[in-house]
Each structure stands twice: as C-alpha cells, then as structure tokens.
Amino acid sequence: MKNILKFRSHHRFKIVQFTDIHWHNGEAPDKQSATLMTQIMKAESPDLVVLTGDILAGGGCNDAADSLRQVIEIVEDGGIPWSAVLGNHDDEGTADRHELMAVMQESELSLAQPGPEEVPGVGNYILPIQSAEQSDAAAVLYFIDSGSYAQTNIGGYDWIKREQIAWYLQESARLTAEAGHPLPALAFFHIPIPEYHEVWDFHTCYGVKYEDVCAPRVNTGFFAAMHEAGDVMGTFVGHEHVNDFWGDFHGIRLCYGRATGYNTYGREGFPRGARVIVLQEGERQFETWLHLDDGTKVHAQPEHTPLQRTFTEE
Image 1 (cartoon, helix red, strand yellow):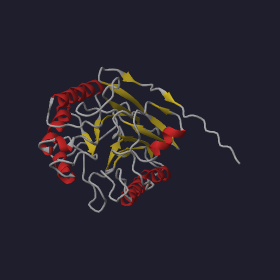
Image 2: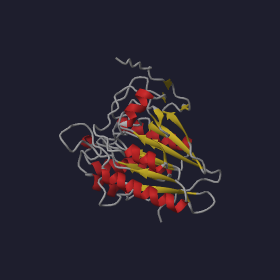
Image 3: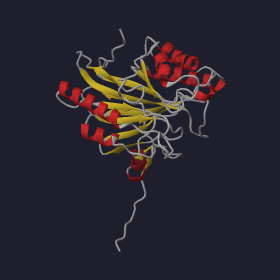
C-alpha cells in the first residue's frame, strides 16, 4: 500500500521542496547536489519531499531514465515519501514525460501519479493529508504539470491548460463538499504563472529576484480559479534558479523554491538549498523558510517594497 500522508501527533506536517536539480549523469556537481539533499533531509526530517521540476537536465543525460533513478535513490535513502512534477528540461533527452513518470512509480516511496488521461500533461494529481487523529482529509496538495514550451508560435514557455483548470476546480469542489469547507491547500508546479510578475512589481515581497520571471505569455486564469475556489493558500514553483521571493497576492502566497542543483547556472553569493514548508492542522496558514547549503536556515528574507507610481491625469 502506498504511503498515507498524515499530520504528526503535534498536528504539524513538514515538506521539503527541492527544485531545479538539473541532474546529468552522476557527475561531480551532481554529487554535490546529492550531498546537499541528504544533509537537508537529515536536518529537517520532513514528512514529504517534493521535486518541482527540472529534476534532470534531460539533454545532458546519457540515459534519462537511469539519471532519474539516481535522483530517486537519494530520496529513497532518506526513507521519506516523495512526489514530483516535471519541468521543461526533464523530457528533452532519451525519455518522454510518460516514461519518466513510469520510472518515478517504480519507487516504493513515490506518490507521483500520471493523472487523468483526458487532462493535458503528465502529473496532474492530488495528495490529501489526513488529520493526526482520524482518517479524514485535513489538508490537500495539488500537483500540476505546467508543461514545457509554448505550443503556438508566440514563443516562450507553456501554460496551464483550461482542461487542467477545470480538473482542479472539479477536484476542489469535491473535496470542499466532502469536508463542508475549503480544505487548506498548497499547489506545486514548475513554471511560474504570470501573477508572479505582478506580485513582485506591485506588492511587498520577501526574498530576491535576480532574473526575469519566465512565466508563459498567455494567462489562462489558473490564479483566478484558485482565488475563487478558496482553498489554495500558497503556490510553489522553480524554473528560475536565482529567484527565491514570495509575496501575498490577493490572499494566496506565490512562492519560489530555492534552487538545489549544482550542475546548472547559479549566482555568486547565492547558495543552493531548499524551501521548507510547514502546515499546522486546522489552520489556514503555513510557515516557510529556506535551508541553505551551509546549514543556515533563513526565516526572514529581505523585504522588497515596489516603488510608488504616480499617475497624472491630463
């Protein structure tokens, strides 16, 4: 039987988010990534590990399936249940998304699922978290395949499809009806939605933005759907390796993870690490902090307040 996620006796549930590992073939930088992941899992003792895409540098892997198994082995050695979504680089090599998902499902500790066949993408699924004292769902995690590259001639990155949004709304409505209220929820996907631009430009954020937000050029309304459904409290993405900010946007905290992998680009003075997320049962809020490669835990990221804009009527 697959692992059941459950709040601990102290009614807390901890997640470690690793993102953009960009594993190649077990090369020297990959071994650094493995050491970092092992250190963080040991220090944090999470209830779940989430990999938010670009697990592999697909085009740089001699055998993508074998490289993915190497990453999975790192998490397996920690004995922690894990889940994942795919990024835009994972399937650029010798294995497509379906093949990579099949490899994930070989693992006894994997909770990753391909999702409904009629919904675009591979890896649209939900994971309920049971109450500490009973089997009822007390919170829920959504996993969305944000795709790879735009499928029309506009360029840039892919977007979450309308069918995926309809699936999310259907699942959210079902869970809300069963519980009698919207369950506290988090959503994980790889490519940030366009609202990550807006929260940085017009709202107070915490953390840094050292590169552009590479969101899709089309906004299909996934944020509006989450806002209206009223369950998702926070979203967690990767994609950009030297952004780690978060900000509250109309009641939903839009968060970047902290890039984990050494076999890809970074920035001097911007250590690799992970984001840690802690849910408290019965509360519509969560704590989050960064765990860096030197063991530092960053609970208070620097505040970014956008410049005031003055509009003059003519």
